[in-house]
Image (cartoon, rainbow, N blue to C red; front, side):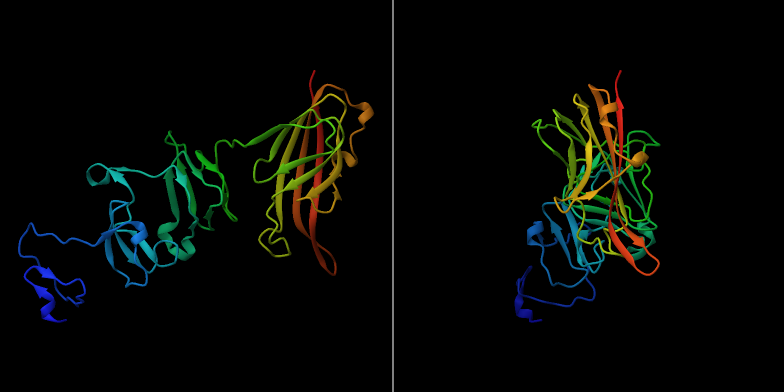
Length: 306
């Protein structure tokens, strides 16, 4: 360090120094941190570097593990947004728009119990993963109102081998009018698992789209999974599913009917509401000498009305 870079109370911005002890002369002295927006955050710097984030209105520090096992910036203290003296009121946003992995096995035992205040939603395209040994609670309005009670998931909530505890689940329902001559009903897994279709005039096959199928081989993440769907319609013409199933418009395969066969259309009563239950599995069939993977679908048909 060259002393020529210090003049009075001014230090040249190019000065670099190793300081083993920093003292202030007066009790009202201050240390001003470098500041900037999130976009200004430097990279490739030493762990322990401090700065002030003008967007978050908080001091932040660069750590080797910023909470997800990788280097990054995080608020100093890690207490999150708060109000009042000593942060008496803790606050959180009502939207999760990042991938979060709650994994005490990797991050440490202090990540075993995670919580936030609801209502809160996971945005489309993002995933909250709750690993083995972790608990994730969404706190509601009542003292006992916890465990995902006010959680809306547009992206993915992955509990792996865990359990989902909730007081109630409200699902999206897709409702639309068919052309009358349509011979196929499409269930979009990314939109809703239940559909209500008006004006069905012909027997129909079922096409299920946007299922997770990128890793459906034996031992892969999307194999050995089960799905449940519901199709509802006003049955004015004794219409039933044909039993033909498609996955993302691919090759047809036949479903297995409850009771061993499709409903007898001649015995149906017109002008009733029909409810078709669709249970779909992607699984491994274990044979005596070899194994195979594939889809199976089970259909249940019921009528309702007076």
